[in-house]
Image (tube, rainbow, N blue to C red; front, side, top):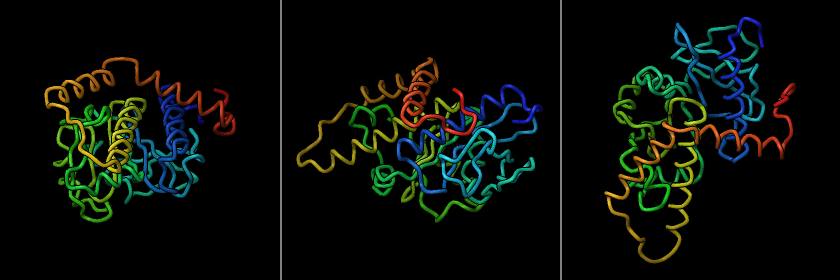
Amino acid sequence: MTMDMTTEEMQLRVRLAECYHLINYYGWTEMIFNHISVRLPGTPTRYLVNPFGLNYDEVTPDNLLVVNADGQLITEAEHKPNPAGFALHGAIHTARDDIHCVIHTHTNAVCAVAMKQAGFSHDNFYGAQLFERVGYHAFEGITLYDEERPRMLESLGDKHVLVLRNHGIAVGEADVARTFFLLWIVQRAAEIQCHAGQIPGPDVLISDDIKRGCARDAATLISGSSAADRMFDAAVRKMRKERGPLWTGDKA
């Protein structure tokens, strides 16, 4: 890392690189595609994102790219970004000051739920935590074009989870750890829903009042406590124990 980076930027780079490795560790990657982005402090507004063409486990604090809201490279780098693929991230970052990190995934369970007209069920432990917290955006093709941005933002509204119908999911929160925590809840909700759908017989339904309370408590846990940081750090420790250093010079 260069000496002109602030300590905060260096810490963000490490945190974001760890998140890329966690997404790979849990099997939530999509080859070289998709992004995890985080807003850098200060002005002008800039974002860190992965180099296009690298696997998630090849991402390091040093090779993360600095781009603008259009996904265009700001600082010189060996690798190149994927501006077209950053359209979704750039739109959310630009419109939502409360969202500093965005993760987009295409896991099997998430994609399966995104294909269903009803979307997420809120009658399992994880789905209940997402009650009234999910926006839905109709499929318009691969999310490459600026003209789709206003419609995606309208679909997201003030929520932190956006289901891209027939496509995948985007989640956003105030920092990397909180976004990862929210993604984990979404992923678990999708997995349980898919498994439950394979078992004959009616589901046990949860009342709206209970679901609303679950969603409120889950949002408070993410935003108002250290739980997300503790969970993220524990996941990273587990990954390092099993895989060793994540990149050259990784001494954490």
